[in-house]
Length: 238
Image (tube, rainbow, N blue to C red; front, side):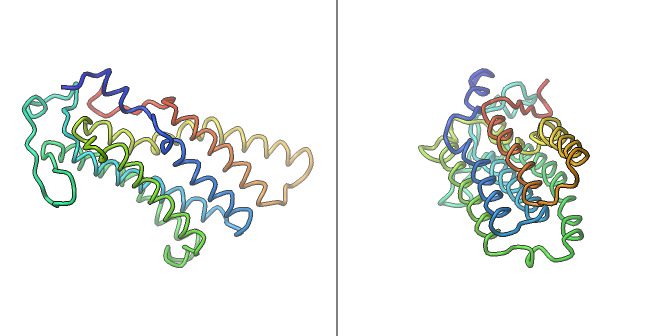
């Protein structure tokens, strides 16, 4: 059985892809703002896609994790796990993980889905018409980078046999937990500075400058948060 210290340590970011994920997203955002006249709508859409992709992929891969969850009540976590092969090309699924995976998949989607409908209403168009070739390329890059991240952390060399489902779920929930630090350390102070500047020098007419004033600091804070500066705790943890 994995002890709590080992589980926590192994769930910390320790590879380049942990830092490259937010960097890739914000590079595309900056390029889109500068060269493709992206608005707040495209920015929010890309953020939602990234959050959804990370959540779905990592919570799903928790089904493959063979190690028990330390501190979780229930005899099923002390018994030897029983693997079930559903798809020959994929790792075996451990049924004891299914309840936890289902719960956090539902929880995460309940955070994400309510933003989709208002986004389409504000944009006054369907999601399919919202996705331009440039935005589609950004979405594809996010999906590929996150699939590579899942592969390296949980699949290659049968790493899932040494990981617990809690480790994968924490990564899947991380973007949702980033929201509060981003609001406190980026959105609030940047908005304050922009309002003060508007009073001092007049209206800031450059939409590009305003959007970059938010996107670049948000990217920097998200990269900083990858360095184990954000603790994600599950419901059973005290």
